[in-house]
Length: 255
Image (cartoon, rainbow, N blue to C red; front, side, top):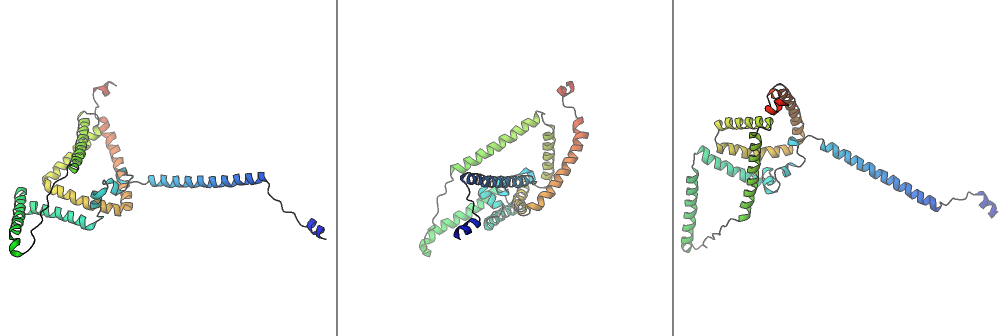
């Protein structure tokens, strides 16, 4: 009876060694194909991100574009007390020189007179008022920051000289017209306000425009894209009707 039961019941088939190997290969191929699909989807997502229009074609965050570090933190109001203090100090300086018509030399002299008088009197009167004399620290400016600023300024000035040399040599008409237009706008702005007011306006814009753009960049970038497309269309028309009709020199005429 036991033999009949064993004969009637189906015998389970154990997988052979080759089947296990092929099965493992099939699983690995499935996993590799899923990994490749994931990589493709990630690449597609990255390509979609790179296609998003950003002002000035930037690919990095606003903080990195502003140079990073403490300067970018001040412009982007990472520390509101520091940014507010810097902007408030600039506002006080502008009020003193522009509205109250203070002279720089006069202001510095008055500040030094008040500071030295207070420290001198305090240092000599501490025995009468029974207080410790003031601890006046020795101020010594480090050399490295000034050398770094001078080096960066030298690079900027050299780039400006190279650009002016390229424009003056008559090689690029578009840059020539752009620089002439920019200088003309600067001359018009100079008639409305002096250098100090222009510097203060630029300083205020640096403390307001970047932080507003960082907060609403998803809404600002599409509008900037539309403006850029329209500007390129108008410039293409201007280029076809005006710039292309300007003679390019004797070499172009001979060609």
